[in-house]
Image 1: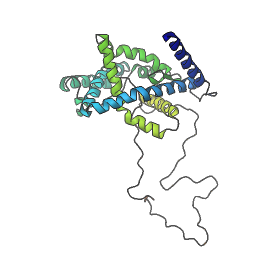
Image 2 (image 1 turned 180 degrees about the vertical axis):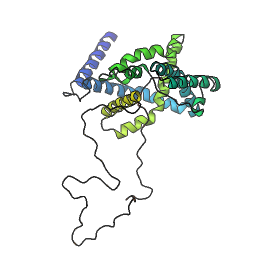
Image 3 (image 1 turned 180 degrees about the horizontal axis):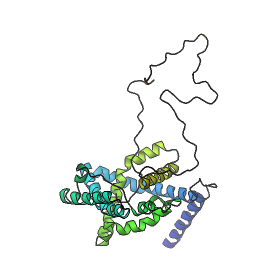
Length: 297
């Protein structure tokens, strides 16, 4: 009976995957795996909503914020070891030396990395992994791909994950049960830190998949190029430009509306003034610097 139940589950999962793959007949430019990606994105999102996110919320409820900050600092300090190696491999000597100094200072004076003393000492935190190192030396990213459970990636970054795993100091912790426990704690802690970001994403994005895809690719290109690179072209129409005084007028319409006969024209606000009620100005939510990624950083 158990084997029959397992077979049915496998068949149902296959049907869902095949159904999802059939939903996109014309993939978006630059995203040839879009059908598969959208299916896997939905699966990952479902797992997150019903498994990982509730655990992360429970973690936030049970663990005080100072302790969570120390957990973040601890894993960040471990991640700086591998980040330093990648920056040195990219011949970013200053960044690599800075990363090594961060590890030394936080380990010695930050109680094993529980406190981020290096940032107070004006040593900035960097990002680095083998996918970025490959990109630095001109290896093309390849198509965008959504990995099971791991989320957004590219063909190049997916290949780099193997080296990232081998270069992660947690991989060499023994016994293996302790190593995987540390990976699990880091995963839950990272997800807890992203609770606010994913809530903003759910509220703001009409198409979560496209939003995450574009944000991920732009972020990776930014990290490789130092902010000077071109973002991927998906053939999407540019957003309209709105000035501070109001929305753009439709084509063929006069920029200034003429009041109807016998109706007094509304007073024109002074230059620089905003036509808003004090205290009711809308302040858009600030997007996070990065997007969901469970690499040590």
